[in-house]
Image 1 (cartoon, one colour):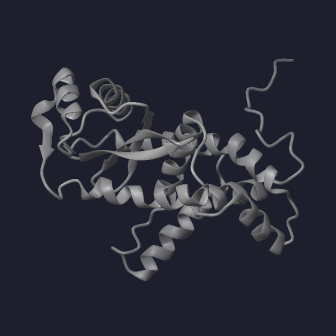
Image 2 (image 1 turned 30 degrees about the vertical axis):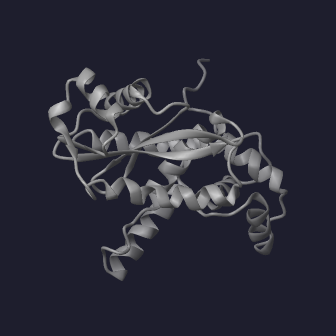
Length: 238
């Protein structure tokens, strides 16, 4: 008899239910909570797990959830060409040393790509932009700050005419850093670049998933979007 082609559940070797695992990962990644905070919140709801279990779950399932969210959104977003990207880099301390987190954000605040590098130069900017363009295609315009590395990289890629530089034009990217900064403080910084890259990618996709832009819509619309996001999260990796 031929074997079934149905994918095996990633939760099959765990005693806890998928609902509990999804809830723990969502609480830890989405909100500025420590591992022990998540443990205490779940304990109040009758779920007795160790904070190290939360750490293991988010390391194991966080990238899986983020990948599925990104795949669903990428197929939808590649159909748009009348959109604008905002590129920016932020300083992040990794084991006491300064590193750079490059981010691409679209005109609606969706975090498209996160990329960690040691340097803030042309090579780093070129790698970051190639990765974003390969994933999402070419936008109509790209807004950056005055960093010369962007000019050099875009000149190599041939999309320099699309660049827009101006004071306050890149506030969209600057504001997108705030949720990550709050989360970074709760985690007491990072110790490895690989850990920063992993968490930044997972956090960006989870943030996109639950970002309903509540300040732009009325209460009934926000509640509808919130319920839809929660229902879609409950079906991840099902």
